[in-house]
Length: 176
Image (tube, rainbow, N blue to C red; front, side, top):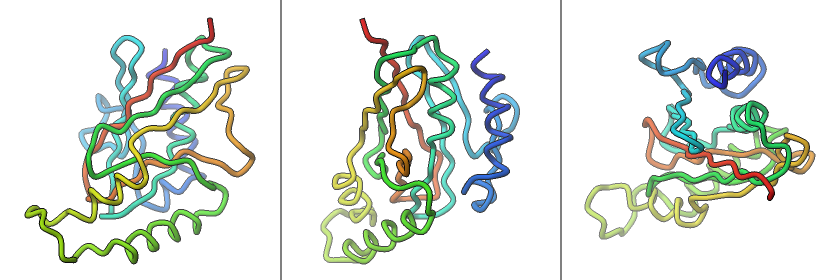
């Protein structure tokens, strides 16, 4: 049930979201060999696969995370988000104006340039630094089956070494 509900949300969200501007398509991994975002679940841990299109990119994943929450039986609890990568992260910030995300991307790139006097030999030291500053996890409260976010807030997957295929782990926990 969760998978089919996600496909419906993904199609609707693609028409009105920044994902369309990034020329991404939402489909489940089983339906497309090149999804922008796909969903799989093992027990209570859900993995969103995120395909990024630029080296530095803040991608609003709020609709997909909300769909996971809505498809669960959890009315009240917490949603834990974790990015298991050393050059990507997760943050909550303004989602209403896409220029805010672009400003964050540009500012991080300006403050921590790609080329610098870094010792890390792989050429992505800046990506590790940015990911460390942004962080790899976030927690959002759930109330009445909805994410508790401020009026303008959204959840952003933060890519700093793309384009790549990444994972965002989502774990829901209900209140006792």
